[in-house]
Length: 114
Length: 113
Image (cartoon, rainbow over all chains, first blue to last red; front, side, top):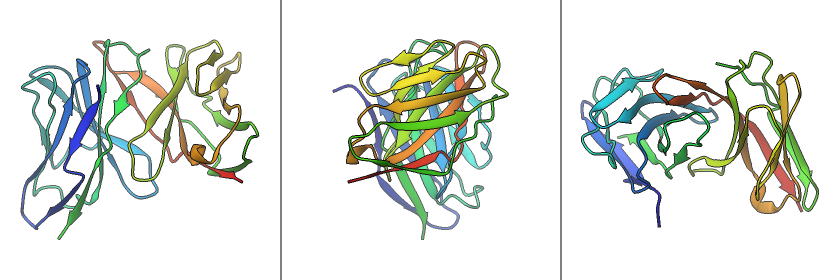
């Protein structure tokens, strides 16, 4: 079935460690997004990419990095510079490149600090 | 981008219509109104969106006021599986055909047996 796959579902990070969250989509969508959700809060945009080899910072990009080498993949690295990384991370994609298309979300990765 | 205001929580009896309101008085003319819902520990699920006209799909109806300052999401026959947090979002374009969704805290809808 077509969709967005995020892995792992749960991830633990040690102090000073970088970790990478995977996001893969087989929807042939051009645009991909990363959001962060804290308990009881809405989602906040970290990074987004409209085409391969191009990406832009969202509202809370500090301490995160991304790459977009392939259309179907948009991994997110949480670096040691992100001092409060514990959160629920959600990846989304969108086709068509127009505002009238909905974004579709994966089931998320929950990151915790050891 | 439009700031949206939703009640923090609502209850609805199973089988009845659930009417979820949203105020977006600062919405601009080209901003779409999107509705998503999120069940605990899952990714948001797209429900419906609209610009000016009322919209209906297999999940819900969206009623947008003529001045576009508010909208109502209607779930015609709520079931227990509709218990979730519902987000009303104004989608702003970010150039070159992309847009960002700015999520608030949403409305927690509880469907009661």
